[in-house]
Image (cartoon, rainbow, N blue to C red; front, side, top):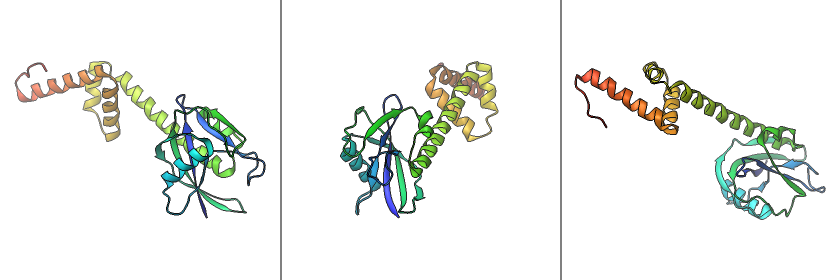
Length: 200
């Protein structure tokens, strides 16, 4: 099993970098996420940073590691270890590849990737859509809790940590919600303790 790292490199527009393999490679003219083989005594993180610098002359920041993907090509078996990375470099210097493209994530599955890279692209899209769904949920909570009465009702009926987390995230994002939560909390304490707190 050959262990190979690859990078899903995002630019400031959140586009993803893909590169095209040469004609005389194992997968001629296929597109891939850039990367390369892990050396002995080298960490996965060191490998991807080195490979991207050698292949593309780009500086990257590793944001997270995705689950590895195994694939048997018949002539070789690989374990592809993907990292999500950010960069401020827009123009890679190609030393091993024929071409590059910056693509919006939603069209990644239409790219003529080699098989292991198809699996990585699918996993990346699932991770992005999951974060997008969570963000929409937080925005939905923000819209719901702009009314103070609705906010009190929501806090009173919180039944799980996920809902509490959404309200907390909303409060961080929106100072008006934070102030309403604080007022609501103060009102509850005043009722329970029998005295009025000074304004804070």
